[in-house]
Length: 64
Image (tube, rainbow, N blue to C red; front, side, top):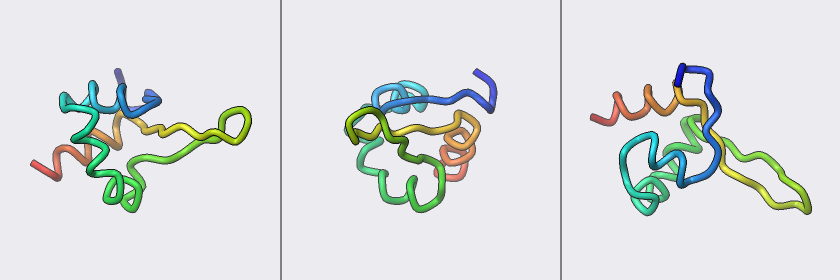
């Protein structure tokens, strides 16, 4: 994965960061406020969480 790869869904975001899905969901607020994750609309008004791999890598480095 390079820095411009789009990661879609909590499960894939958690796998990318090497944590559980439950753990990464607990950081939803800081990730959203920092612009590290965003939501896209899918069909029928549903939405999915997305993130760029570079943004997640940057966020995880600052957290450590």
